[in-house]
Image 1 (cartoon, one colour):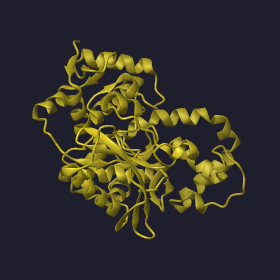
Image 2 (image 1 turned 60 degrees about the vertical axis):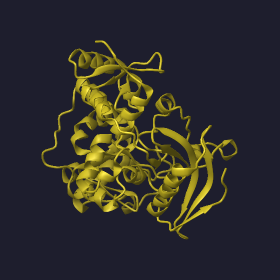
Image 3 (image 1 turned 30 degrees about the vertical axis):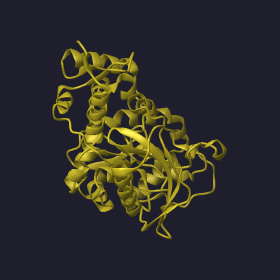
Image 4 (image 1 turned 90 degrees about the horizontal axis):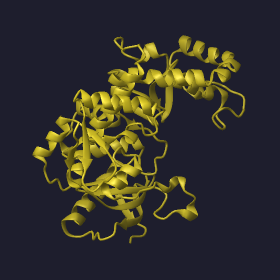
Length: 385
């Protein structure tokens, strides 16, 4: 099938449009929040809260009226969202639940030797949850012992094994700690329980990635996912022949074939010039694939909290700054919630960018918003460049 060709500016627009970073003011209700999670396909969960938890920041960026209780209700009460593993720990739409079975089966089999060795522990955990209801790891008393995952307690180790293999599910989080329960008490009654075929799973990964990103390459589709590249290639060929997806070339990006849909390309017919500023989470869905980010937006980004302090160039927790369809800088920041001060530790601009006039006005406005979102009332500049 002949590839369509679009400009780099059109490609950026599609990416931003499908990532729901345009017209964010239109999202106001819990139903809108669910639509955002369904569109993105996943929202990453991360323990770092220097500014705010990753999932809260990602959702707030697209939904300025976001409230934590909305997500809690979607998870526990409405059963429209669940927690599991995408390329990392994540909240996902319930309609994608059946596509978790393949990973759960792989996990169950991969650690079968450990399972046999710790069968008494696993049975003990399951019996307690069956009889007592939802429990957290702190509800178990455990001897001090190093386990499979670094220095977690044996019960925590067992709970996580049962969770990742699908024998337990997460009902909610309390103080950011998982509350485990039996899947049948967490999931809706009509949930599909049949494991998808390899072809179905490949198709799911392809269509989910294209829907969330506007377009995607073969490597981007299986990024950090334990899935056979041959199966993905086969599914791409089938979907293209069936005209459910379209090969796509982007001017200026050589030797790369992307895939999209006709509906995505139609968005370019009503393309608007949207002047917005977003101060993004390092775990935002738009920036999480660093190679794609650099190729598409010419923005070389690394989160340096995992880099030794002496080797950091921009700071521990640097937030990417997006203006319209261009990344204009990054800001190392920290929310001092005890004193309600949002600390801008350092502020960097990309080459050729001067923050002045209307852009400065938009940035200052967005900075005040993110400070309030992070629980702060005052902004303090410790150093600026």
